[in-house]
Image 1 (cartoon, helix red, strand yellow):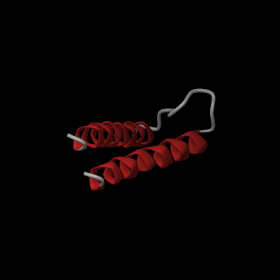
Image 2 (image 1 turned 135 degrees about the vertical axis):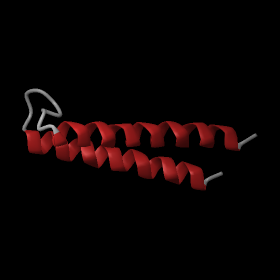
Image 3 (image 1 turned 90 degrees about the horizontal axis):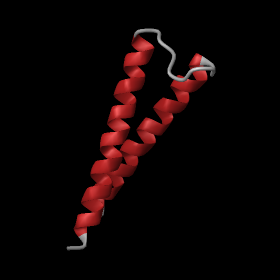
Length: 65
């Protein structure tokens, strides 16, 4: 019973992190802006860092099961 919240949180974090990395990669590949009004390098870097952070957080939640 106690593993339910960890599974839910791990799934949510991992899915969001993977989707953010996939979206950022597609935007960079097509040379489209990741965020409007922001430096392309800064926005792509920040989005990549947060995507990896969310993936790591999701994996950490799965290790707590």
